[in-house]
Image 1 (cartoon, rainbow, N blue to C red):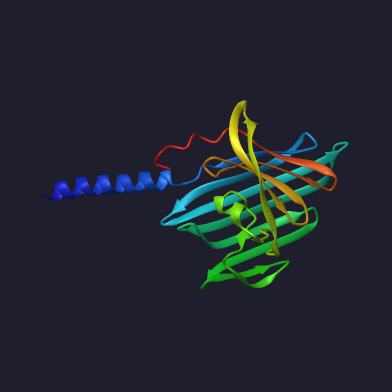
Image 2 (image 1 turned 180 degrees about the vertical axis):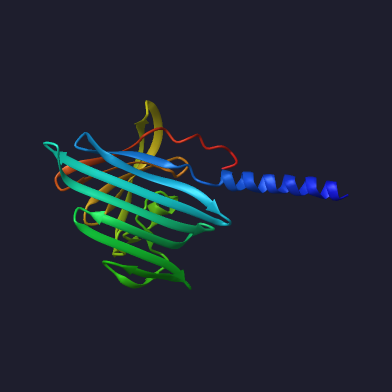
Length: 220
């Protein structure tokens, strides 16, 4: 009897682990280009801690001129999600001479934010500017993951397009987020973030996946 219970328990735990793994998003690895020249990376990696989904972002960008570094940006953040809702976010950013921090915690039906650009309560309809999650395309209020700044923006659906990722043609839908600048965001049929472009300081910035994301299976 004990052995039978143990077998059933192991099978159940294996099934639970498989389901948790299947529901975990695929890691995202973008190569970042400025006017066609590669300047760094933007990566998002995912893991599980019990019922929580952990999303960790690492961004490093450097621009050089005549072998001299003229711009440097470094950002790291950690998000905690539970049942599709953001629970906490912390980040540190070095933006070419300026240091920024953000600490966000869910409290009641909203968030408490402490950042270098804003500190105070924020309603739960605001979403972080980490872009990787499907809810992004229906949002209208945003929290800057660098500094806590809260802003209203407009997201417009441009339409279906086909983009190339690692020599593979990928169907995607393009959206634009308009606020201080206009950012193009592409998501595939599974709602996964697969490309970005925008203009900053007179330069064209492109995010290109280092490799195609794995196919989505029926269990996902």
